[in-house]
Length: 121
Picture (cartoon, rainbow, N blue to C red):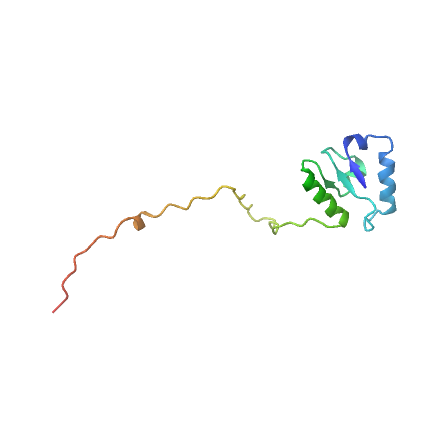
């Protein structure tokens, strides 16, 4: 497991450590190298191409859930179908309730009362 921070990446042995783990399983199938970022920073060279799990900007419970899922090999899946290229963007959902459209004037007016006409003979 590699826990990435700017300090770790700039340390003397960081590159040798994660490259040794990566060399033992370059395809990632044996999951010998799990990469977790604990702060947002630019990852250098090959390290930037590895799939990682971001743990920064999360509360402790959320970070623990994400870390545990990654360790189990669970992948996050989208909750909605992605937009097909060329389709218009979907409007963002608002957290505030929408007001209903105004009622047309015709439905707000009371019907005009007509006196009954006498029926024919």
